[in-house]
Amino acid sequence: MATINDNYLKLKAGYLFPEIARRVNAFAQANPDAKIIRLGIGDVTEPLPEACRQAMIQAVEDMGNRSTFKGYGPEQGYDWLRSKIATHDFQSRGCEIDAAEIFVSDGSKCDTGNILDIFGDNNTIAVTDPVYPVYVDTNVMAGHTGDASDKGEYEGLVYLPITAENNFTAQIPSQKVDLIYLCFPNNPTGATATKEYLKAWVDYAKANGSIIFFDAAYEAYITDPSLPHSIYEIEGAKDCTIEFRSFSKNAGFTGTRCALTVVPQNLTAKAADGADVELWKLWNRRQSTKFNGVSYIVQRGAEAVYSPAGQAQVKELVSFYLENARIIREQLTAAGLQVYGGVNAPYVWVKTPHALSSWDFFDKLLHQVNVVGTPGSGFGASGEGYFRISAFNSRENVEVAMQRITEKFKV
Ligand SMILES: Cc1ncc(COP(=O)(O)O)c(C=O)c1O
View 1 (cartoon, rainbow, N blue to C red):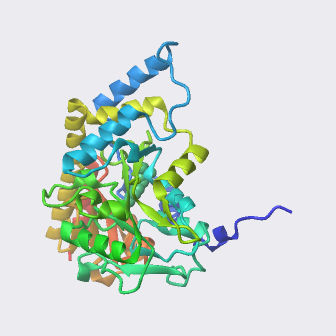
View 2: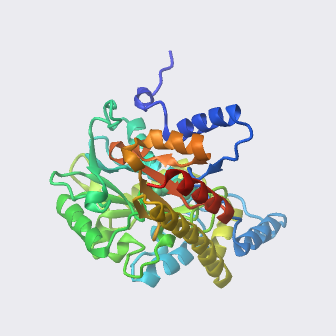
């Protein structure tokens, strides 16, 4: 008799976004005339940059010609893309990252989950609370946790609370952990990390033989020139960090799919016999075995991000969403709400008014002003009492949504 991976049964049934969809659909069915504005899921709304579109059209033409046709590409990504990433995203910021250390993939969501394939099952794993839920759920699926408590916390994970009190930056743990997920600019809180803060983590990781998983999916939203875009800007980070990047939120590739993971060649972790093993070799083996690369067409689209026109268009796109974030922040602040984030990130993290629970505020917003956001508690127990509003939407929708919220919820 076939059996299942029982770890899947430990997953909390109502993954955040399906539960939001369920409530929104029920409301929409009962109120077919309601003009619902969705500021919930962090999906982009604006069209792809022209430079990327043109590059992909040309790539389609290449595929239609025997002399330029491409079959399977390298599992790690084409060299022309990897070298542009290395030069523009890393070397230009003083990070000694080589093209060979860059693995092009079809998404950071997959990579942040798949990376667990190359690590052992006995690592102590730390996540922030609240957190991007994929980090937690992929560990549950891999059998790295026990059951969830009533609060939704899985036995065996180390939760590092991030709240207004610590500026939404987790305190370095006093205990030893082996794997640590950090995400800056942060989803869901919109918080950022200074170089000094990341240095403290790098020092901790090096002292404890830990590996940091650094998710920089939103680095393009950093406007403050003093903030690091990559953890490799921090001395010593190459000895203890894997960094994840994505074209989803800078170039709007959420539906096009392209991302990258950096695994430095000198980075090692321990084998059962105590030997130091290079993680680059394991990830290369994993990708070569389980992945057949991102399509040629999409990689050409991603490459165009680094052209002068692509750079200008991506900047414009990011500025557009940041302006939405500014409108959200300012309007909600003027209405008396306490808001965080949204300056170097596309997410605004709002303290719910009148001590409402996150889901109560969600229901009130949906029912009274037909605006959808994301309940903070869905990202972790410490997100209770907070609410995430995404800047990924049209200007009109953002303005109308803010008008509706501020009229109804003036504190
Ligand atoms: C923190 C974080 N990492 C990764 C992703 C997913 O990126 P991708 O579209 O490359 O899979 C998201 C998407 O919302 C995210 O918020």
